[in-house]
Amino acid sequence: MHVRPFKSSWRLGLGGVAGALLLSACGGGLYLGFDDFDDNPPRVDVAVDPTSAQAGQSVRVIASASDDESGVDWVYFYRLDDNLAVRIGDDGRAPYEATMLVPSDGRSSVRVFARAYDFAGNRADSAVVTLTVTP
Image (cartoon, rainbow, N blue to C red; front, side, top):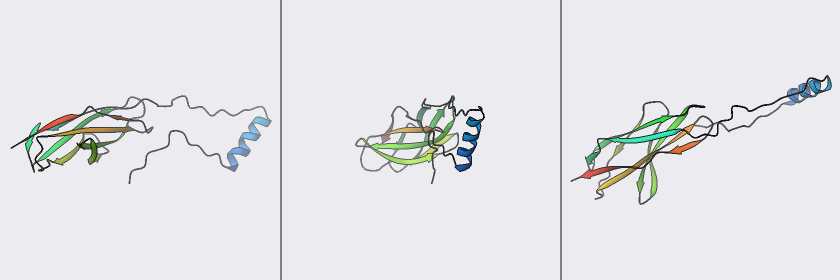
């Protein structure tokens, strides 16, 4: 199971509270700053290789993901079935990719997209790309 960090959850124990009170009593003060807060989502693009395949074949779904602030944490891959996102795989290390079995239910195309998360918990979806199912 993969767990993402919370954006900013801090706990100050009894020692921390006592230390803060001591500092403030002697004129020291306490500063808790979050200057480098990352609220920008990562960037992600997706492609399929090959771009057309027969039903029952396996294809690679490849994502290019980047994040300038906190870095890319994880990428998930989805197939759209009647606008319902069905997860086909995930990858936590570049190059981000998954293998998809082309459905053999008579469809002529398969739509896929990737969803990337950064280490701050921000997410972004790629554009949807289409795989052509050949007879």
